Length: 325
Ligand code: SF4
Image 1 (spheres, rainbow, N blue to C red):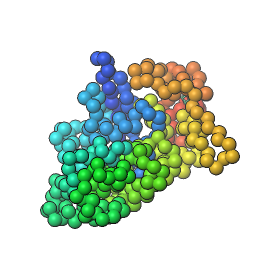
Image 2: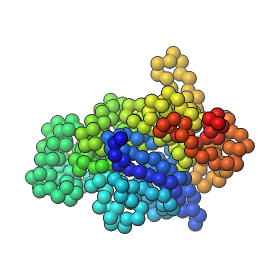
Image 3: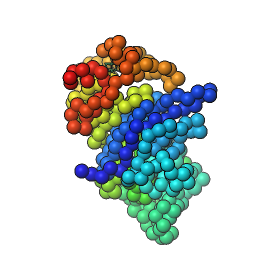
Image 4: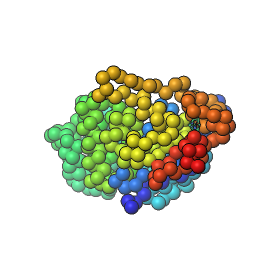
């Protein structure tokens, strides 16, 4: 069994809005192993990005972790000081954002940004850092890397900037890579190239990848395991083949039906009925019940507990539990 890189257990986080605390993550647990890509999937506002920000200790000032545990290579992160967490970022865990300009400094050359991280986190000399930066630019398929090192981010296309961001993060050889919708802003061809690249680098470095996306096409390309979130709750988790061939939670089934089948003669998209709940909305029982076609009185009053229906495949739904009994 591959080693666990990231272990998140019973994570609860809140946002303070108008002097009131609202849960944004409700008892979230999952694991990422080395050389494994776990895709976290769900609609906007489901808690995917908040999960990554919580792991990276980048929650906004009105957000806080209430309880739960986050371990990186067995080390508990929630009890570390901010300074200790900062030291881990960039060294043992790296993050790639949807828009690379979020992380790239527009005032510094690509070379300076790439080498600084290597010198700081890996203790390399100037020459070693330069050579490693060029090597990683080549690995991510960037031609004339020496020339690119002299350029500024604004001189590069979005696709190139994203490759440079990947090179910058992977050159440090982190245990954990968090990628938050890294291909959403790219056109389809570049998107595919970036996914292939991420997969290759993951294997080279044995990194564990937590990949955030709302796109099931991307999930099919890259995931080993899938975690489905709805309104701050984990509703289903399983291996990619299991989730795609045997989805159990009504929300997961709804997500699958909402994807157009491009090979079908007619598009038959069935959007999930109803609207996604607001963070401030109080919903008793199962948080999906207002939109679930199978909701019962029990669903409206009692929060479903997670059950394991086959090895590694878990679901939180009364209906599935009752069918198992
Ligand atoms: Fe639907 Fe009830 Fe299952 Fe929630 S617990 S998903 S409301 S059947």
